[in-house]
Structures are given as structure tokens and as C-alpha cells.
Amino acid sequence: MRAVGDVELAGKIAEWARGLEELSHSLLTKVNELLRSLGAPELNALTFSIGCVYESEGEEEEEWRKERGGPNIHVFRIAGRYFPSTKEIVLYFCKDGYKLETLVHEIVHHLQYTDYAEVSYKRRDAELFDEMLPYRFRPHELEAKLRAEAVARSLSQGDQSACEEAA
Image 1: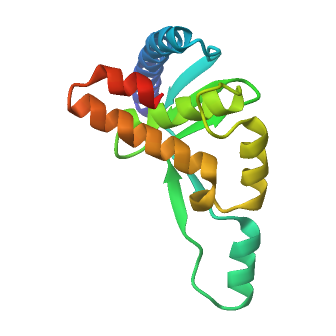
Image 2 (image 1 turned 180 degrees about the horizontal axis):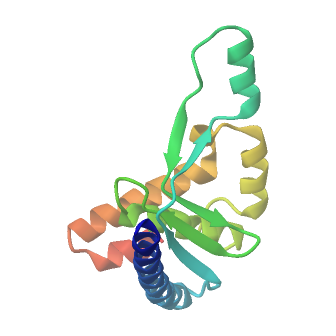
Image 3 (image 1 turned 30 degrees about the vertical axis):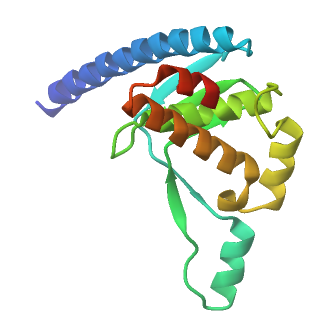
């Protein structure tokens, strides 16, 4: 009996995954329309994932703290990620859902890594900062965070023109 239930469950999961794929494609279409309107390069892919991804401030720092008996390093859940080599955004639903700010944050990274003129930090800056600085101190991450917050604020106030300026 268990095998029948497992097959049914697998079928439901596959159906749900196809729905996520359709949703991902629909959002990619809308995001690329926005990017075209800005004169920016399009994304190749945008994927919704129910996976949970975590990152720490760096293995070297974690090892240093373990050796000295200090507290564990801060580990945080990643809500989204931009992959510059494939021009893809992945949004992770994980436990607490999805926020528009996450999408905007990752779009800003896309603009940075494609050297879009309207962002402060470009690909070379971002690559350098990724190697040199912990996440919370990276200027390109701060820029993405601030722009995403500005867009979210503007949308909550119903101001579409401010959203375009923030992007």
C-alpha cells in the first residue's frame, strides 16, 4: 500500500513543480519587460525554489572562532541569489515565503554584474568586494538592499515613478 501512496505523492509534487516552473516563466517575462524598458540586458532565467539555502560569513572566520573556542559564526538564510555567469535569479521560498524586496535586490545585482550605467557598483567592484569583505560590509550588497527597500516603500505608497528611479 505504501508504494501507491508514494507514487501519488510524487505525482502531486511533480504537478506542483510544474506550477512553480510556470510561475517562474511568467515572472521572468515581466522582469525582462521591465529591464528592456530601462535599456538593460535581459535575464536568461528566473526560478522559484522551495529549497532552503544558508550562508555564513566565511569558512576562514568560522575555523578561526572554532580554534579559539569562540561563539559560532552567524549563519543566515538566503532569500535569493543572482548567478552572473548564467544571468539567472533564483528565489528561495523556504519557510517564510517570498518578498518583492528580494526580487528587486537580485535585479540590482543583475544590473551591477552587467555594468548597467545607473548603478554605483559594477561587475569588477562586486567581484572584488565578494573576495575581500564579509557579506554585510559589501558596498554592492548595501546598494542592492537600499534600492530594494526604496522600491518596496514606493510600491506600498503607490508611487510607480519612484520605483523606476530606484532601479
